[in-house]
Image (cartoon, rainbow over all chains, first blue to last red; front, side, top):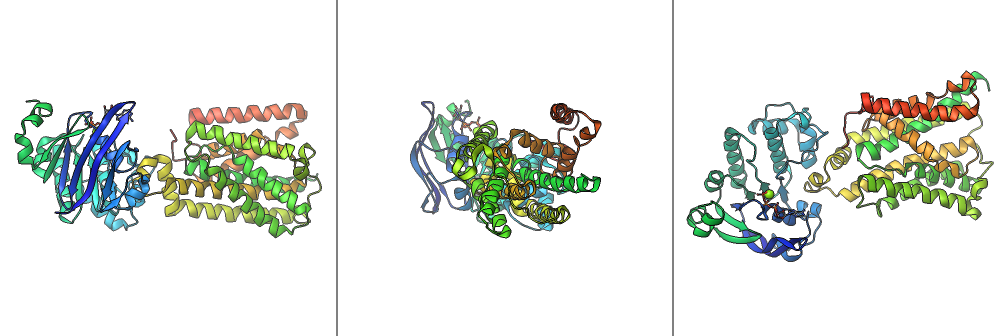
Length: 230
Length: 285
Ligand SMILES: Nc1ncnc2c1ncn2[C@@H]1O[C@H](COP(=O)(O)OP(=O)(O)OP(=O)(O)O)[C@@H](O)[C@H]1O
Ligand SMILES: [Mg+2]
């Protein structure tokens, strides 16, 4: 099994406090990997480090056997890393169509088909501030999927979306993985994580606490203590 | 001055301001850069034109060199301000305007300082012909900018304006796009400066005046951010609005402040009743 992303000893401090602390893990190509952990564990910070938004203090990152440590965000993206944000970041004065076209130039037909398959019943010319929060999340996900990538990072995709859309999301993510995309997702919804992922990494206070298959993680006593609160 | 000559005069200056408003809107409205250096690009264009045409360079060449000079100035300004946003960018670019004004005032061997440069050759003999050329340029500029802002480049500029991070994770080189917007915007402002120098035939450091900068901002805000149509309408309205004051018979010492009060009232009225301007569709926050 080939790893597509290696995170080696990555440390990030905010004013002396390590949000991410000597963190190392590999993401295997073609899998769905979940990154879980309590609030403030450093998950989002880790995403921002991988996409080059926040500089790291120590360590390095290798993507498809290429060192991407210290590369600019747009360069890292162009290597094939696409992502969404914990709080959606749509281009607020632009329409759905314009938002999607920034990711990739495709025809209206493709865009419409995509919206339908995501269950967003809005015309392409809708301004994205006129969408509900859940719809905004879906459009952001559609945008991330349109952008040419081999690696997809999702920061809490199910936050604020209803159970029906949640099932849609599962299908969409599974479908992406089936088509060869490697997925790394942050998620608090345990049912979602356990039913979807091949591999789970548990982060606590910036360190990797445990990792393994969902079945293994579910039984890990330390994980139960710090995270699942049992 | 005969009334028709007066109208031609107004037409020429309207075109000049429309070019300035369109180009400012490219940086301000479409790309979200609070650029107070815009009047400096205009002044740079005017000075390049004046200095070179006094050396006897042909018109077409001074025109091209003024545009290139503006382009280079815009690109150069993009470097030190690369990491600045919002108010900080505004302050830094205002500083750029002051520096350019100071150079024009103090580099006497080149600019004759406060004495200014008189006797700049006219572009064409008659003002009718002048109106033709500046109208043609304005139409070309308007078409070019409207094409640019509708293209995928324009879409990316607007995406960057709304959310830089969102654009970066979609592989967009934000610095390169901002540099492009500033460069194109500056070269058009410099072209307006070229026309100004040849029309007035005299320039001095007052081409870097903050009053003109405020005028340009009023035009863009009245017309609407990120609207090329708005830049045209706003440019013409703001430029022509104070003109009737001339005919009321006020002394010039009253006309100046009256203009300023008029613009202030318009801006306050717009901000209260129509913050997006006449044609604007975007909110900057
Ligand atoms: N820009 C920042 N400046 C200072 N501290 C920060 C910054 N970003 C994150 N932190 C701190 O780093 C720690 C990790 O934050 P992070 O957002 O990565 O957590 P998380 O695991 O994503 O949590 P959640 O599940 O709540 O989203 C937190 O203690 C947070 O306060
Ligand atoms: Mg988070």
